[in-house]
Image (cartoon, rainbow, N blue to C red; front, side, top):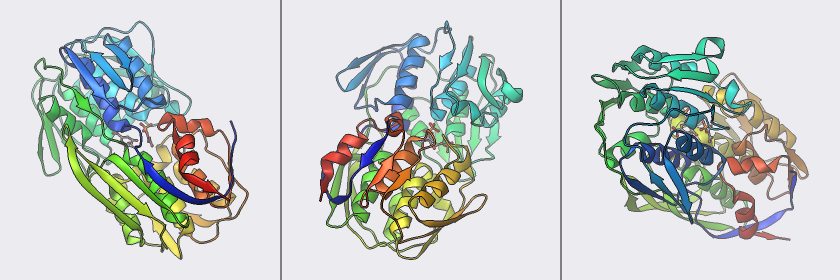
Length: 426
Ligand SMILES: O=C(O)C1=C[C@@H](OP(=O)(O)O)[C@@H](O)[C@H](O)C1
Ligand SMILES: C=C(OP(=O)(O)O)C(=O)O
């Protein structure tokens, strides 16, 4: 479905973004393993997390939608062998975390997904999980899905992750809940720590010391309700939209402000953004608060490579902000963007070009020359939700045509409506 966005004069209002995708995936999985009933309040109900709900149902959990919430009747650590292939759709987080979880279960399961997911690297999880004792087969020797897993009989490992990936960390930690002895994961750089926080919430074994995260075999644990914060990765589109549009002010309420997710806020501040935020409460182990963004004169910066894992999904929208900034923005450490839902580095470069913006791309970096977005561009999402939304924002002020706009529903089903609601047109 193509969507025409006519020029937007200003963007004003308050928005509560949908629930955090990472926390929703984890809440569904750990609720499905608990004993008794977990209410997951304000979860994300979108393509990726509905795939997780369906997978956990196929594994024996009872999950019902109760208004905006999920009610999960857990299995008490014992999942059921699924009767069919588990379809992980477009969700990298689902297939990787579930691979870890199923490695610990005495059952056989096959995990697959859409064309994008079947291109994404799985060796990063199958390697440590096999070291723990899981039997995993997959295409290209276990590097690509479909993955066939026969779990059980795991031993803990000490695993130094070669990539800074929260999905790999979480897969190994989930397997560690079913392994004999201790499991230690060592991170090369900090990544989002939702798994560590949700383990604590459910009373599961977890200890963090510097860059080492430890767990051990879990005893059956009780269900415990969980409120999901708003997703800062979804808020990011409205933050940048307000910054680059004249006469704009947007306030985002109830947003997760976990410091392992706020890299974008730091970069935008350095670019000169009129941006404020405050943590006002804690939701079951996650800091939550508000963000306010006002029209700003942005300037190009050279981004600190250490910030990238703390904003890994926000690079497309940062590129959109850079396109509107004065001067050059250099973003390094982008190797991981090559293996997301699309090759995001290539997709960013192509869409900047489509909108008339000059950019130079290297193997793991991009340099963007700001200040030259043209009217009438076309956004090509490459089947990638974040690319669709980021470049819709980039073209907002001048008007833009977004192809395959339905991809936004992977993480943010109400995105187009919310954008429409906050926009004033000429
Ligand atoms: O653990 C998670 O929930 C996620 C981790 C990140 O992936 P990597 O672990 O591959 O960096 C991120 O891109 C993804 O959207 C969600
Ligand atoms: C990379 C993303 O998700 P996943 O890896 O779960 O597909 C994303 O949402 O930007």
